Image (cartoon, rainbow, N blue to C red; front, side, top):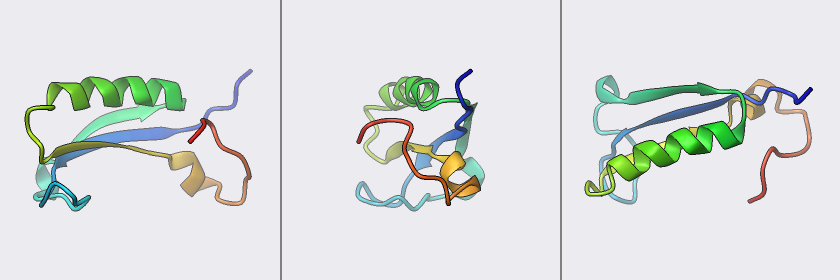
Length: 79
C-alpha cells in the first residue's frame, strides 16, 4: 500500500506576475486535497491551463505532508 502524501491545490489572482501574494484572500480558489503529488499535479494542470490567458492567476501545489511531518526524509517526486 502506498503511503498517503497529502497535497493541497489552490490559486487565485496574485498582486504581480512575479508574486505569490494573493490580491484578495477571500477569492482564493481552494481546488482540493489530494493523496499524491501525481493527482495534485493533474488538478493543478487543469486549473492552470484554464487560466493561461490571465498572467496574474496562479495555482500552486502545497506539500502538506511535509508540513505535517517535517522530520521525515525523502520526497514524493523528482525536482
